Image 1 (cartoon, rainbow, N blue to C red):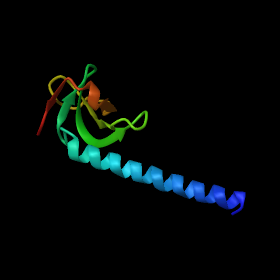
Image 2 (image 1 turned 90 degrees about the horizontal axis):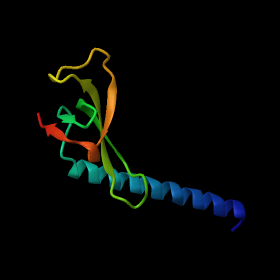
Image 3 (image 1 turned 60 degrees about the vertical axis):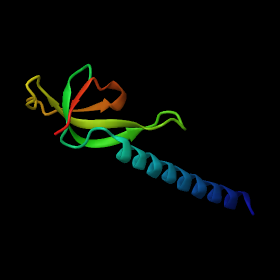
Length: 99
């Protein structure tokens, strides 16, 4: 095996490993998330209506953290004029309402 072949094999294995970890994290989040699309959640900054759920794992092998992405809402639950999207980390939620 040449050095180039080694590097190619190593890169292929690394890609396969990273893809497997991402699939595992995504499965974990989808099976264990408390809130879903359309739910309204609140953190210390404000409220959002969830439009997308992603995840983050900042140091492996920690359990992934759900990241909820959605439109900013006013206190009365209606969308703000700016239609800005915000990310709320699952660890920062102070209140939630399922639809």
